[in-house]
Length: 135
Image (tube, rainbow, N blue to C red):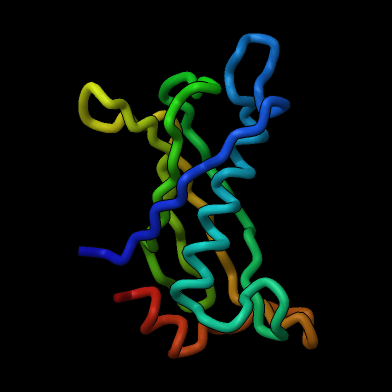
């Protein structure tokens, strides 16, 4: 079984649009919260502020069902693929209902690249990162 983080999402009133859905832009921010938690657990250090960082170079999001303000929302994050300089995160946003199984509302894939900010270039994934992501 792959390592996966589960991040409970606290929605804000202003996340809701005029149709009483959680706005798609806000959903992306929820996925970012899940990414931060996952990267902290797997890459150690601070992949957001260290010299060696992770940057997002591509995202693809599928919206399968409406996310509503009163949904019990959480995000799961796991590594789906590891390349030479990049890895792909698979994230799913669920509504956990009391009356049954969780429902996938939104799914997102993000390609993350190892980036050396001092040299301003992408670099190969460090062995430690590769090992931690493949667990």
